[in-house]
Amino acid sequence: MIGVFPFYSNALGGINLRVHSKDKDKVLHIIEDLNTNSNLRIV
Image 1 (spheres, helix red, strand yellow):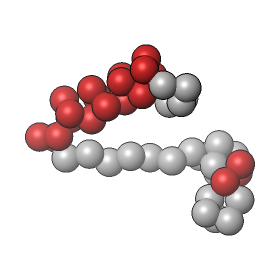
Image 2: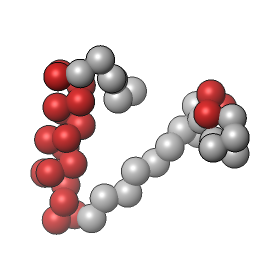
Image 3: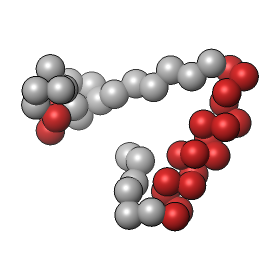
């Protein structure tokens, strides 16, 4: 549904990202980098 209507993602409960526990630090670093060094924001 989100692929067809991307603006519905919040109404449908958003998007969940599942990450393996051994990749947690790497993922947190990527998210932090996106929030501080780009025009994109993770909300």
